[in-house]
Image (cartoon, rainbow, N blue to C red; front, top):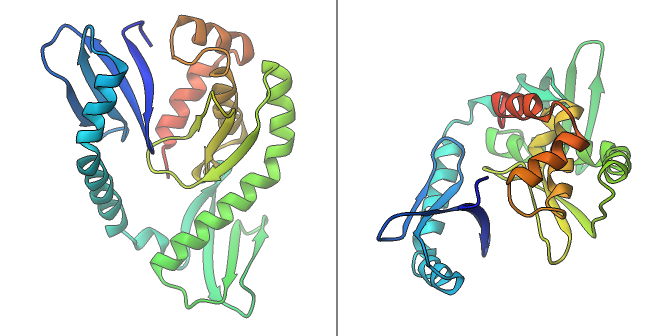
Length: 237
């Protein structure tokens, strides 16, 4: 990011703030990447920014709610025998009711995954089960990735949380040194997950996406720009 562009967190929202030669503060949500974008004139203080966001907080929550509802309209991709990615490979998923609260079996030969739960399968339930499945699979591979990425960056963290998010692959708190990762990362190849983890760890060295931040990424993961493009191409699946 340029010196006139930086990240800002307000309650549950992550924003990209751009300082421009303009008169009024403007706030919008980018429909392509789902990021909130705040444009402010030169000289606007952090206190003024937060006051503006507070006055628009209810509207922001309403927009998020509408986007979530819109995303949930198309539930056909969560029907039985639908295809979904797991670590970059497509599998056919089946959902069935069972006595167990949650269980699953992966057949690598047939590229099928059977998910069992004590619910009658339906698209809404299936989506929740799939997200839970992704969380568990991500948890399995994280220890090795954490060891590798912390060794590369020489950065430590306090806690990593896995959450299902609709607009970000990851986030971090400089104050608590906690990292959040999107459960949908389990759809991506391991190298993509590694990149997101390195990205968030690098923010402990440099909070913004400036030249210094990118120089660190060049050092930690040469070729990260190609990986970043591939992540955006696959998207949230």
